Length: 274
Image (cartoon, rainbow, N blue to C red; front, side, top):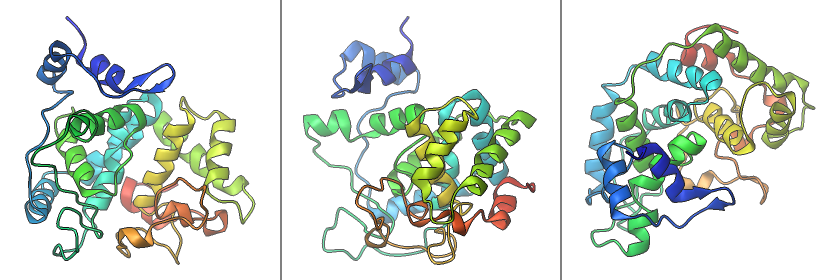
């Protein structure tokens, strides 16, 4: 019998990079049966989506979220890493209504309407399957889009709970210690490069980029001027980096080494001190 996870990963990725999402009906049904692939989602309003977010947040223990992120560091099980960004983004979303000119997109929370009549391209590349691929391949990418955050939380509740080891905590400490080795004006790209150079744990460039995005979202790598969403929720217009080539997410895309590490946020998120 084919492996559902392998089918998911091979649908969107090969040795030379991205693929177009083409999949046979047999493989799709196999991966769907094992819970790795899904039918294109039904249309839901902005209000319905936010209501689902509120309800699912009540089911999630932040200690389990922190444990999952830590556990992912030594195991490289990236599906456990993603939840930290999604949870801390979702829990910070303020009550609001859709008041945009485009009724299918909210520029505050990032909600986008699923198409009621999706095209062939959307069926392959704009549904839940590509979101799940990014969870397993990179540790997530769209944490600050509410559709992804909701899906990520739903999938997280299906995963077995895990307990991190001392090794996991040591890895995270070494990652953050790299901040102290930077020049004051160095930005997050330099931090990523140093983490890779230090060979602290098994990872690649994309994985480290996402990891640093997540540490920014939960406030550990953020600045007073550009804090995390919990402290100041900003819309999509305010999240872009200053530099054109900066491909990190807000707020770590505005962070500098001189901003340092927010130890109060660290203790709040992980429930221990470093």
